Image (cartoon, rainbow, N blue to C red):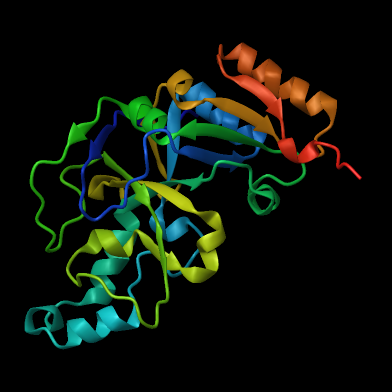
Length: 254
């Protein structure tokens, strides 16, 4: 059964996000099934925040909790309930910002026969639609201006025992992670959609795959037949991007 696919609207200029350059290289590591799904549906999968595997997703630091405790209005909010709900209607597509492949991410997300899509920040934005510039922003309690609007920015890696941010800006909690995850160098596309909170399996937003996909790399030590399968899938779906072997397979020189 094909998933429901919805149109997206990328938004740029959000002050809660740290942007990367349009030509910054982004990588998405995956197995072959996820590539086929992307090409069959012409849709990018966004995982619900509470299903990403890190229990700290959407949480705050000790300093933010202390700040809330000293603010009369914040003390009146049941933050556990609020953030529990926020984690159910925020959806993320996670990419790694790097000029080169990551041996660690190959092992984590595409070991034993996987692949990686290489794109750029600009391609990712354009693949989702014509970007709109944010006009005005009220941080207090704000998530996103409207349903299925996509914001893209760098995840900030911080010490959760000391770091702080605006206690009422719920967006910022979803764009911070612990220092232990800094190797991911994540750029996150984030969607807020309360109407889709019931979609535990995630949200699918329409993309132009030939704009999105710059290159496809097959994982290190992949057999020749696997690369041929990936090339066949790309041909079947008329993907213009080249399929390349991982550069980690280059022979060492002694």
